[in-house]
Image (cartoon, rainbow, N blue to C red; front, side):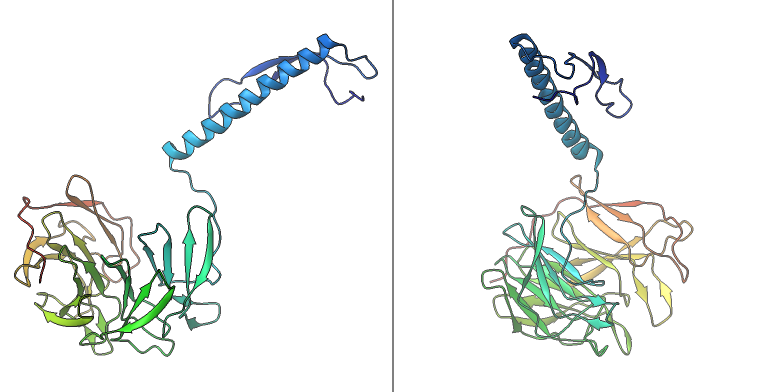
Length: 329
């Protein structure tokens, strides 16, 4: 047995975990041509056991660092390059990627694919009836996904909507909205309906809103917002109301600071103040996330007519909890 690859005896540093002192392990010496007696073999086996334990510890350490440090790691790639698409977590734990724009081919996509977190891969699923970008995709209580509005491959803004069924992997047409919309919001309410708010048409920005009822597959008008908005955010609060924040009013070329609340029990919007009055407090293309403490984190985006400078993070405190409205019959 050739043993020339085994080093002379001594102490070898193994690794240094992020600023810690190196871990050392002693190892025995076996020279080329030396007989491997039982003592040497036992020593080598002991060293192998120590190395195995250290490797296991390093794996655990890396896993802990990943969990605590928020590290990003690569995963499988989509089959098509996409922007202005949607990503919707399904009830089965997979993620539906619907439509978007492929700038490499200058086409709006009708294709969709599923991401499987267990396998870390994307696989094609059924395609939409038309290509869409800047649309919305909302998970319904029945497990299906409502895809609504957006622009098609010819740049035409759509009023149509369709449903994705994870059980069959297919899209089917459902009722159309009362008006074409792109860059709008779609929010699942506690009563199971979906609030579609604002957006843009070729004529300008919308203040109108409508409700999609999964039971009937139809859209009906509800109260209008006090301000025309597109590229805003809509966040369901713990009290059942929806916080509408920021966005853009293309009619007067203004990025907005105002906020308003939608009350599903009355079908009306009411003012709730505005984003904090500091430089660049107006926001477009930002995010708004409901936190566990009931506040809403509003972050990033662009302000005014210029690329966004770093914007301060703000939080909106949800008003006191009110009884939720009874589900519509």
